[in-house]
Length: 75
Image (cartoon, rainbow, N blue to C red):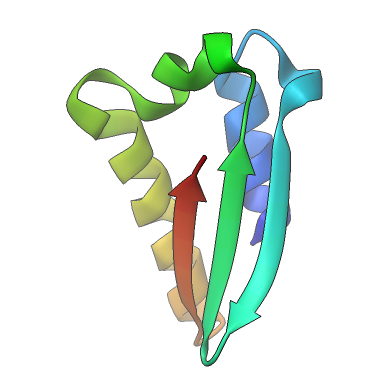
C-alpha cells in the first residue's frame, strides 16, 4: 500500500524527492501518512479535494484485495 501511495503522489507533484509516506498500524487499521513539499500540497489535494478522494478510493480498492482497512492522511 505504501508503495502505491508513493508512486501516485510522485506522479502528481513537481518535487517528487520530497514525497514521504509513513506507515503505522492502529488496531486493525493501517494508516498511511503522506507528506509532500508545501508547494505541491494543492496538487495532491486537488480542487475541492477531488484528487485526495480519488487517491483514497484507489488505495481502499487495493486494500479490499488484501482484506485490510486503510486510511490515507495528507499532512
